[in-house]
Image (cartoon, rainbow, N blue to C red; front, side, top):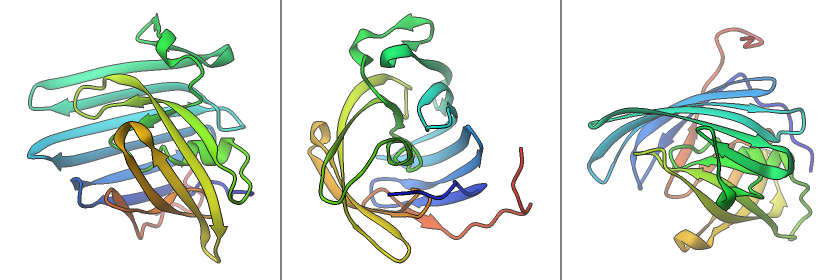
Length: 199
């Protein structure tokens, strides 16, 4: 499975679980985005800046959130052998996690799709450093992605998250960005105002 480069910008409307919106601005080696939402009557906003290497391995993550209780910032760094440092402290519980995954985001699902090697109907287990939306708490999250088929417009994956007792069919485009994440988000039409979207 070969994925196309990420577009310069993309956007999603959140559905069902929350009401809100997410935007992404991508450039080589960097994904910057922001989500604002209301979930279970609680309003929050999360901004993220993710640096990846040429193989889409997560390297450095900066994030901030805003809630009725104020704002918070967090810094994550993935070192050699998938060791994670959060706000300057090694987090052994995250050792072996390959990617960062934001609760607030439909974007971070694209990271393992670009990094891992997929074959039809062969599950790929992914451990991620999962960042909560309201307090930026970081915890380990085990997930499984199974490429089930290709389409004219992209790929279909079966996604499973046992910790949340959740599974669904993810529809992604040729760049590996979510088009339809049932119960979570749907991709909106979005075109960049600058042809190459250089930053």
